[in-house]
Image (tube, rainbow, N blue to C red; front, side):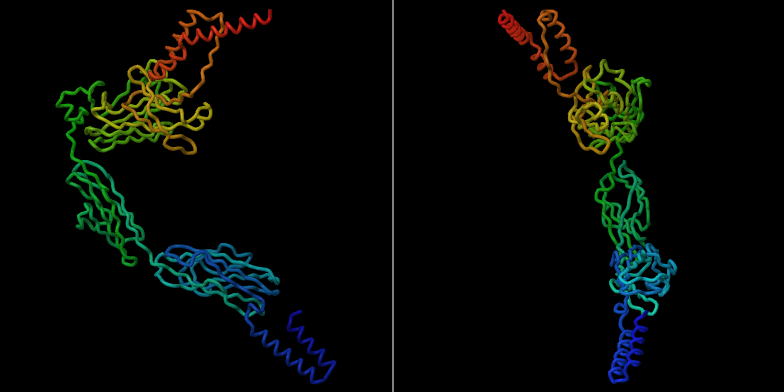
Length: 513
């Protein structure tokens, strides 16, 4: 029974039972109460609604989310939500809480509506979530979202909460790329505009001298003289203004080196009659490998142009190639030079014996022609490589024991190796090297040596065998390690140890007697 019907019933009862002035007074009071109820706000009549937005400030083309919360203070029927947004704003419904949705994706006022057919009980809530996208060509300014809720026999009321959205003026961002960034004069460079928000005009300064060089969007420019150049781009949008991008020292142009590409040797070498052999100052250019193909698991090639005084880095990206980079500082210009990485199936056929320790990878590194990596040509040479964490775990070794070994002069030489970084799969290392040749990535764990002596095996033959074994173990290790091992296996120490054991044995036999 509704409140109105209840009040009317009360009036009839009072009139039946009494014809006094009191009944007339009560009737007037009830009528006044009905009138007041009819003109009260909808929240007092039973509906409350509020609005929240995910962002109050947006740029053209950006999106934000609107959430409407509706609560009924008493039972209502045919609950309706009507939202009005600025013309052209794109709307996409997200959650409607079982409401029937009426509207279009792009709408004008009073066309976005949600209607709940079922009754909404007192104390219950409904909510609506929808996404709004501001047109990319929207002008800056303050915009309003308005809405109202209503129900059967309940007057409409405005949705409270956030209603104002500020659209900010779009900020132009200038940016560009260029290719190539390095080369010999004359060098033609292609520039590409990467500016955001559609510039209308461009002003290029390719040499940083303050003069306009081009008005094209993505021009090409030729640098005639050697040098390092700063590039400046000013991009302008008639609506959003302008923005300047400066890249200092962006383009490097070098002198044309006096290189004989056919011989791959520098002019200094040619004038001095250098042969490029292993003992001389060999040139750049191509290279070849003496490794038989049957022992090569993977070969990767990288080419770079080498210029005096400019750091050179060969980068390798093969999936199974564990050599990442080969780097050095050239003392001469060599032009186009080739670097080859060979991941081997087994120990290189060039070496006499395997590298010491637990070997992760055997690899050949070749750069330029024979003798290219001599101190006369290069300095600060290094090799970056990686080691699988799975292998570290399986071999029960520590990453701190991993080192790069170089085979040179019929011996394996450990190189200064440092751990540079790691990811989920690999540890990454960098090793300093005086040259390029066969290498091995290996781990040598520190182990304590136990000595077991039997009196029946003490003698000249034992000492000879131990000396042979020591020679075998020390092959390829630094001299300091050899000296240490020699001290540990000295005959004097063994004699003292044996004498001590004999005394203990003698004492034990005497005690038994």
